[in-house]
Length: 571
Image (cartoon, rainbow, N blue to C red; front, side, top):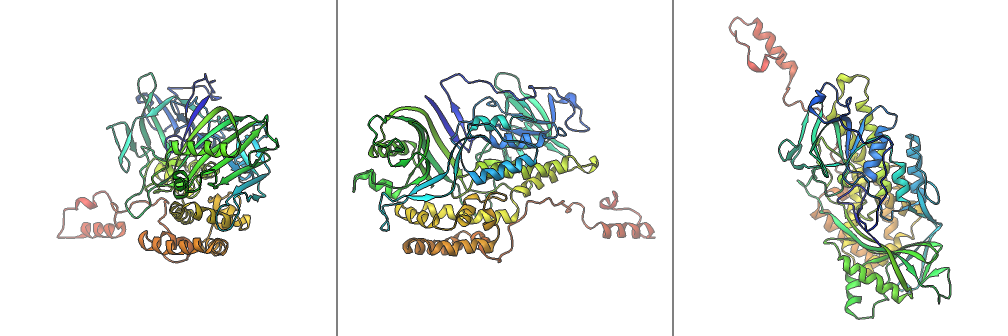
């Protein structure tokens, strides 16, 4: 049996594998190389063990996407650093088919073809239909099934890793630094920025430290990064946590009356939500707990008698117990007559959602969880991360490959990449979703059933846009302006049960009063836009040059003043 921990906070791959079986080593098409000269310009390379244009920390989807995109075309020397580079990506990534197609198209335009997998395009399994169960409240029978005519896919993580395993070199080492302020780190000397780049210490597993020199450093090590500072100085909401226990199981179907079903679940459909609680005795402590702290079942039939099931707490603060999720899952399966004969894989998901964005003016670029790119209401991340990586990589390339080498500015490169990820308009859209996550955390199972029953009764263009939440993804254009978000909200209000609508209306008022202008700013033209990540040269130490030059000229002509002030000597 394989156990995996799905940790978006710790690794760019969202997974930390604890295997009991031997793994094959996947090597980059460029062999591991050290002492590679030719990265940063005008530096004494003998002072470093290795140099490069861009150093990517972390080897999950975020890191691999950035490294392969930046290295495409061969004009930048890109190095990926991760002790666990050879580890597999094991999470059961689920994506909407139409969203995945937008990612495929974007990468193909960048010269990277995402392929492989049983279905192709790095997809392992595809379902043409998606089911949901929100019965048990508001006169909706427990057995009622809501069917969504929108295909859903399971990504093949091995194929995706192989696809993105190109255009860069690999150093199997991790950084040893921790930020103690903006662009300040401990231990002293372990990470130093200067005008033309960064010098960083990397520690291999069983070797002496490596001194690496790079123009730009990118951190893709996850939400709880030690290098990217989050902006917690103003009003912000702490992260919520999506917690889930999942398992791939084999079922005994010898007495099954219908082999097209796995209990109540159609094997030809993927089940996105099952929020029913009828598997617990009415009035029991288990039932009361499931009503107050809801979890849902997420089901992927994998063919034959194999099925992936996952009991998930959508978002909570603090997070729900893994043991509680596991017990609820197997109680649910037993109630539905699903007899498990073998567990072949377990998955423990821990996904921070929401929280503060990175602070501005940082030299290290965060991507993925390190830049808080996880959807604050749903936990969806893969498509958002891959799409955002294309924009960030383009911004870095434009700066580093400038024809005028004398004008290259690494601060501007990083600021431009942050702006590509978090433009003011994208921040406004995120703030809208952050409120959604905060509201969901206040709801019991009755509220969540009513919420999602109304949500999925909207046109797919509206609910699909909310779930996307990132520029370029399918349907996101229906949420990219304040007017479109308020239109979505008005349509949503008339679809949900009135108790949920009243609760939300009160919540909106309270949130706007206590948490500042972010929500109002996201759905109205008032209060301007959020502060931009765009690069701005700090002119405070320069001052008003015109006035100073005038003073210098007058002093030189003066018959009384002979000494030129220090402040004017450099003019």
